[in-house]
Amino acid sequence: MENIVMVSEFDQRTQRKINTVFTRQQEVIVEESGQQIAVIISSIRYQTLLKIAHLWVKERFLDAQQAIYQATLDIPLEEIDRLIAEVIQESRQQRGKVHASCA
Image 1 (tube, helix red, strand yellow):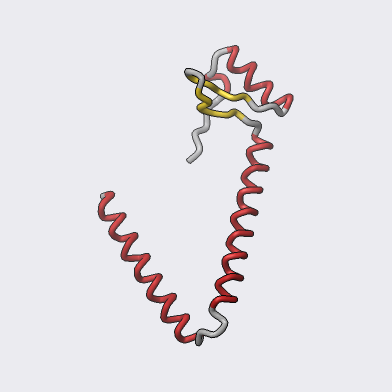
Image 2 (cartoon, helix red, strand yellow):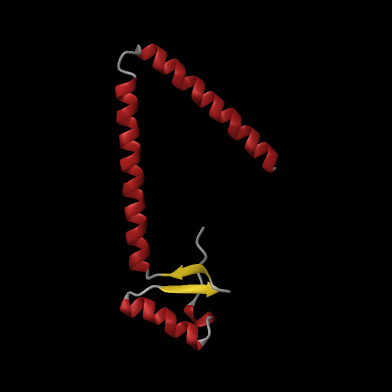
């Protein structure tokens, strides 16, 4: 969930740090009591990281898909369909339980 804030809401020193992130493409690490709690990066870097993450997830999905295909070559399609239907039903039941407990 995005939290959009106008740069004008920050004090002058913070605005300068944010400007450094933008103009020099350098991240700013935010610390509290010696602990790194956040990193401020440019929008360009953020979009690049999102693309990399999406590509990584897609690659993992395709790898898993290929592994499942190889592992199920000797199982009749009707049996695979039945197993998939069972898993979908179980997943829907679990989601229903989670949604009911959150309400």
